[in-house]
Amino acid sequence: MPLTFFPAWLTYRRFIKGVFVVTYVRREYPEWSWSFSRSQVFESCKRRYYYQYYGSHNGWEDSASQEQKTAYRLKKLANLFTVLGEAVHTVAEQAAAKAAAGQQLPQPESVEESIRAALRTAYKDSRDRRPDFLRRPNRVLMLHEFYYGGGPDARLVETIKERAKRCAEHLLGCQTMVELQGSSPELLQCENFDTFPMNGTPVFAVPDLMYRVESGRMVLVDWKTGAQEEEHRQQLAFYAMYLVEKHRTSPERILGRLEYLNGGSHEDVRFDRAALDRAEERALASMGEMRQYLADVKLNQPLAKKRYPLTDNRHQCPSCSFFELCQDELERGADVDG
Ligand code: SF4
Image 1 (cartoon, protein in one colour):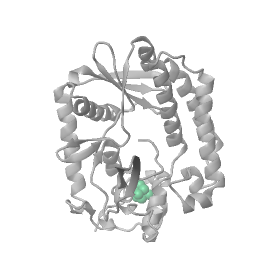
Image 2 (cartoon, protein in one colour):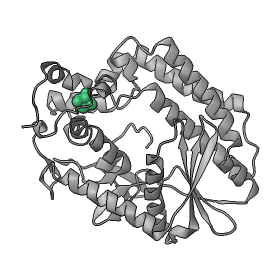
Image 3 (cartoon, helix red, strand yellow):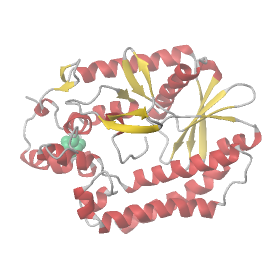
Image 4 (tube, rainbow, N blue to C red):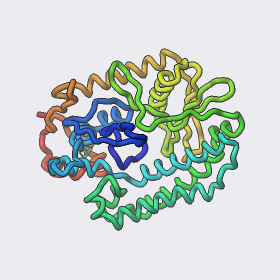
């Protein structure tokens, strides 16, 4: 999901006298929804899940508690890998639009430069604009590496630079670009923050890119800048469900594609009804587990924070955005299960 500087799900737009008016709607508790990434956070650490989806809610308000404000600020932290991923998604979207329109693709050097420019901005803002971030965390990018330390070490910077170069090169020659240039495809619109309903729950699952080729087959693409993982196929199944719901197509007419831009490979995934039913079962089970951590399911009111335990896999804590809020508890080794 792209980085956003505005909590769009807390607003609604009205068309008044020819202009859209964005209105802030205050909610005591966040709206209930589900996404694959939400389920991953839930699996990784219940306390992280609490801060990400509940403890940070309303943390942008002046009257919020200090903990809410801190959780909201920490939720906004990025790292060099997420900034790289975001920048690659931006250039991939631009390149796909050009390829589909029959225009010439940019040179790898200029794509790499666009990615590196985004990384430089993130680096400089994090290094130089800490007071601005503390004041307006939704307006300034801050890297975890600067927030919690003196910045990324030289080896990490080198790794990211090499990855930016490889992603730029592989993007322009990837299977999707070849297909877009040769098949007069119709690009299908993806709405940021769009959802589809599953048993009454709004599910966020919007693919990075969707297009229809001449045969009528729909292709959905997910750009990846990291290593291959089995979970990625699961994620694609939810995107396929979105496509089935929004475009009233059958699973068999969808081709999912994972483009691994760092390694320069891709994996095509086909679907059938049974595969999507299994994905739905998994999502419903995950929703059921999440609801066990609610005091009021209708209001989406969470249980008290202490009911969301710290993870046992403490190796992930130093790189977690919410480390600042857990540090004392981690050092005390407190039993927080009660
Ligand atoms: S610092 Fe560790 S325990 Fe705390 S939220 Fe993050 S992963 Fe969970």
